[in-house]
Image (cartoon, rainbow, N blue to C red; front, side, top):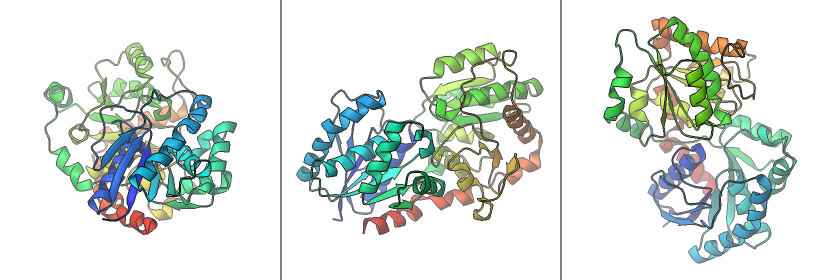
Length: 403
């Protein structure tokens, strides 16, 4: 048996990219012969499928304000140290900021002797305005043995803006062949008619992600009003749950798009939904390395994405394009980049606030992908680049790091 590893993550709940990363990485390492255990800070269901042993602190830990979560560090860190001793853990891999802080504090104050590998999954620039969280990153991350970044841009930001130098980029991974297998499963019966519609006139866009500020779905919904004005039978399906559901539902109602936009909640198997769609649209304000883009590409689905920091550019563009100045829209090798959106919550009708130029650009791109069959064909070849993120390739980098 190889090394004993503890994967520390806030939860394994279905719906989150970091949670899915933890389950995928742990399962892949388990298949490679490592002794894998998971420790979550909270117990949430349904969980992503995982291989290995499972533990949870689950003592009333809930998402709360940053000050409460900071105090919780001193409660949970010693318990992490204790569990590592009981399980003879040799390495902790912590996933995302709060888990990273817990892991390093277990060493710094409570004598945890294990190797600690922290990981950063979203653009750390979003924390610069928070003196507390940015200070915690600057303090804790350099005290880990290594900080793994899921994109080169994240690594650059940590190096230049936080002074964190113990960094390494390893992209997120997924099982591409498993994606293709899951895509062959039947779409749930209650959604069959929605996706079929009028075969000659219908066109299905899809977006996936939590209904939160980060994902910017209100911009997509507002832009879609203009698309429907020209193509009345077009549809947009949004998979995911979150705190903005009510606001987004109200916006859909006010824009009279109830027959065109459907919030389908969390789905256990998202791939039949992707398989029945014609184009994937990402409207995020920030990301890390969005797995949803890779999932869409693995099914050869054309992609339109905001050029948010960080990740979309590294997935969709060739390496030669990464540092080029961009004029939007930017036509990458594997998808189209829309100008990034402002971080502003706009739950308003077009009469209350007209579409801005970025929203108009997005609607123009959606209209173009509907009308231009040659463009759709050009961007229906993403599977080839999705294999850059296949688990068989990415796990090699993790094994080299663990050695």
